[in-house]
Image (cartoon, rainbow, N blue to C red):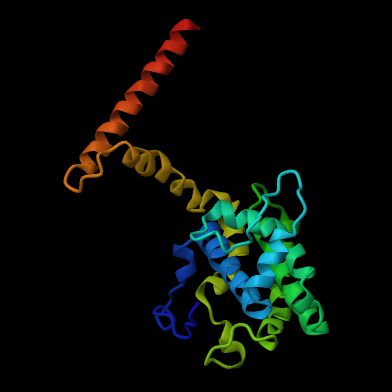
Length: 242
């Protein structure tokens, strides 16, 4: 996650770039800030200890198990990161390495909790004045405790001081409260809505093709059209049968 001190729009007169891009929970939070929180925790406690924490999570209804930790997960999608977020705070709080560092370890725990709370609040389908204020509080709590990551050896870059956290996806969280006031709940804007269609219109059709480079796309289109006609005919039969 590279620091960006001078984004291209910073000196454009009257430019408010965030008004042209509504928040995206999938890529900014789940695949962005949360991903790098996990990376920083791994830098602090090590991959083996972090995996042991996930492996030790007791079976709980509605919570995914990680019998091999995170090492077996090569390419994490949004659903996997949501599953990780459900147990991450418990894993961090129980980490021997984090606990032995006293107040600095507590800062890491508080910062991690703030990000997880922010994620849960941002994902709500309905908001009130209170939930928006709680979002801001979570963000302030993270910034008040983020130095704990640096003190324990994570986020070591050539940047110094506040510049260590000049991260576009982290900065984008500042605009979540404004976006909720302006356009309502953020589930209307997350790209996970459209990415879900990759399964129906890309992955499934591809599995039913020959795999040949020169004909795969055409075969996918034919498969999708045929499937749509079958579904339409099924709907007609159901309607006709009453």
